[in-house]
Length: 145
Image (cartoon, rainbow, N blue to C red; front, side, top):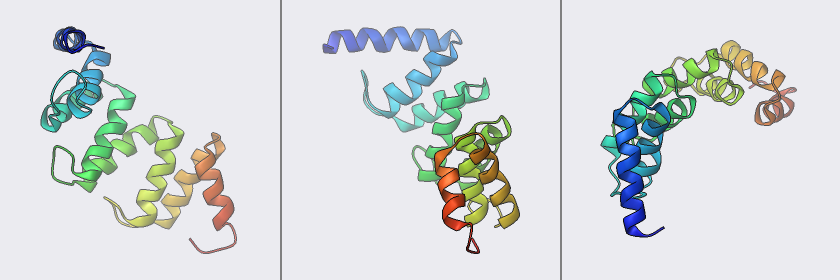
């Protein structure tokens, strides 16, 4: 794409986001402001637009927010907020989030360590076919986690 095309794409997506389109909010936050496509990177704005999309139910925006809080991108590291977004996704039934939530409990990341909760969430993910969860359970079936 040419710079002119990228500028036009940015303006179109920004306009759609401002009108309330949650997919445009996600694209504006992650692809444009975080990744720097069509605009200079600005992780503060990325966090702002991803938060708007996530609060309206955009699944991938919730994952990205958890990641940003986990890594301190556009915000100070906040393990509790990272945990909260993963918890919400896990409770909605997303197997990858269930697996990650299990690891949060296992390692005491953003929450107190809780082996029972860790195994519960990882098991739920494995039952849904999450290969990482299945491999984790297989690897640790004969050991204390």
